Image 1 (spheres, each protein chain N blue to C red):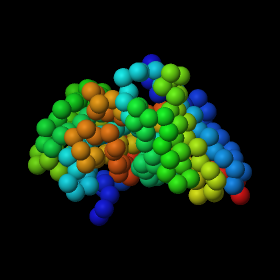
Image 2 (image 1 turned 90 degrees about the horizontal axis):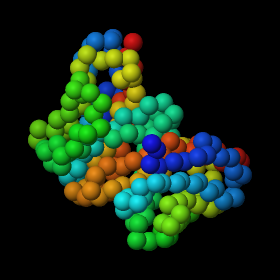
Image 3 (image 1 turned 90 degrees about the vertical axis):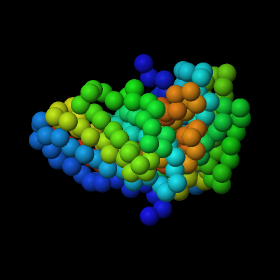
Image 4 (image 1 turned 120 degrees about the vertical axis):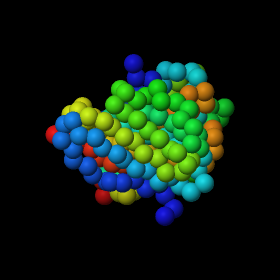
Length: 112
Length: 114
């Protein structure tokens, strides 16, 4: 029973265009959501997060949107750059459980 | 160093061998987490420490897995009598606060059991 799902295993985008990565969750007890970026042979790197009481958080080229009623969040990267090519993981945090639950990741490729 | 470090980075073990994986968290971080990541999957929670106290070990797959953090900083994940299904990347993460919502990960230890 996957509580956090990333249904697109891969995404290709042209440099300069917008990348949109999606994530769905089932557990309404999650109160914090995070996006991590992972390069091969490295650990996940924290990118951006959002509290469940908000619907948008922006940091430079990265914006995360949360739709609680749909149990859906998305990460927008604009403009996309070739260095953004990596696997992106969506993760959800429950304050009561104090653990991150991860999706299976989306491989983003930004084409020059 | 500024980030979470783990050693060894790679470990090859024969089935039945015991292994010990080390994690050095970011200095001053109270919370420490271990995750297991299988190929093509996201990391899965194993266990959590707040300082030296192991508050949650519900993700440990069997009693062959044991973790400790005796002085509230460095942590060791030990796997006894390794099996082939233990082959995975083992990730350590630390968080500044007890709430633990923003976790910073180390590079991982890739374990291969033959």
